[in-house]
Length: 276
Image (cartoon, helix red, strand yellow):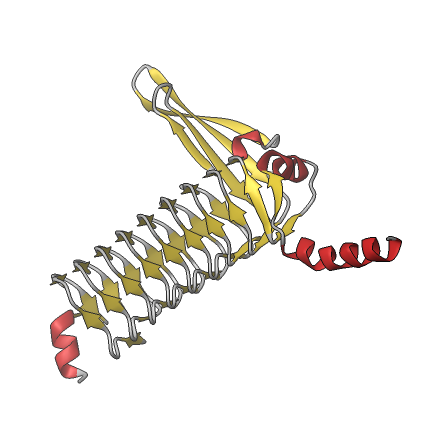
């Protein structure tokens, strides 16, 4: 009997290795508050990752409204985050705006923030957030809103092979270093209006199933849309591009707008005709 019990126990060990372990999001926030690295693999994170619970915070007032203060709380995340093959069941809240009392909450990440092959089942909210060091989202899937509006990445950032099931909003985002969106899939609107790409950006193999808005976007150090597929409206109105620009095998199945678009300061269509 004892031999049989041991045999069953050893058989169960491999099964346990494949079981997804659950971790409460508040436990992760507590670890960050202690200055400890949040490093997780193959776990499910339950509850909201709410960075308003970060203890290192400051309160700023913005006197833009007449007779009323507009407050901003900034939360300083001073420990690294690294997640691989994880599932986030709740919201990722690094931005929150309470319209009722005009209070803005923003998380600032001062160490590495790296996600690989993770799934975010609810909103991913990092509007206005700053990423001071490495940031990466390679292979991640965003099932709900991916809000990167006004976010700032101070190092090269990897969005390769990401999937966006709902709106992906990068409006006004700043990328001072290289940005890699190769093979990304955007199921709903992909908004890159006014986005600043100061370094080379790679959209090769990307697929845009809905509207792709690059209006007023700037590509001063080159961009690749090689093998990219635009299934719906592609809006590049007023966009500014500079070499190297790769448009090899790009497909436009929907309507397009390249009005006032320039490459090397030349009108878009004229440039293409001269460089066939």
